[in-house]
Amino acid sequence: QKEVEQNSGPLSVPEGAIASLNCTYSDRVSQSFFWYRQYSGKSPELIMSIYSNGDKEDGRFTAQLNKASQYVSLLIRDSQPSDSATYLCAVQTGANNLFFGTGTRLTVIP
Amino acid sequence: DTGVSQDPRHKITKRGQNVTFRCDPISEHNRLYWYRQTLGQGPEFLTYFQNEAQLEKSRLLSDRFSAERPKGSFSTLEIQRTEQGDSAMYLCASATGTGVGEQYFGPGTRLTVT
Image (cartoon, rainbow over all chains, first blue to last red; front, side, top):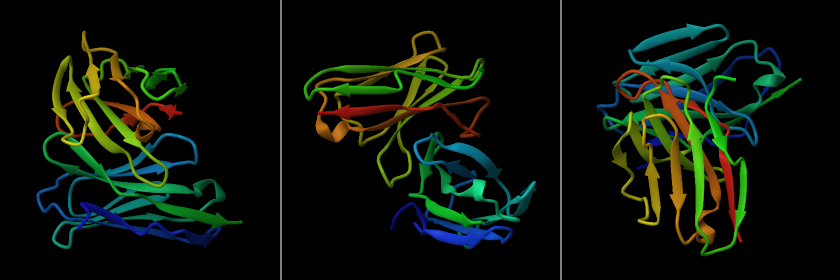
């Protein structure tokens, strides 16, 4: 089983809709979780971090964490074409490492 | 620009040559990470520095790879005797504080081994 699993997509949503991105992880002791956005040919950009169960909101983005189910999600409200990118889920493994999923490619259709 | 910078942005080399990449982290960030990313994959952890100390190195990292951060500021990653399989984007990230924390990535160095 991979340490971090994401649906590779592509996920297509119409402009203005809610995009829902999901991630599961295998290490039960992980305490830190991150979502990065990566545009084609660019480096990852941190958009959200979450450390406790529940929801964390930042503008149009909401991260959700359920440690019992080992599940992290990212909701993007009012999706814009500029949100079209690959979204990487990253999970802390060990004291110093982040393990990244392979990413979900999101396309927002105008 | 106060973000993470990397140099060079692109490097083409012939198999068997040595290459060295540089990373300048965000000022005062004590933690520095190197990752490698290939097409369709997420970044893969290579090594981690806290200040000048290299505290962790991936088990998957070949002995041909070495990294330094001599004064706790910039870092270099050297690949000796490059192989075609080394072709990838090499990413540097920095962070502050303790724990894994929030890491900020540089633009990356794209290596092509011919």
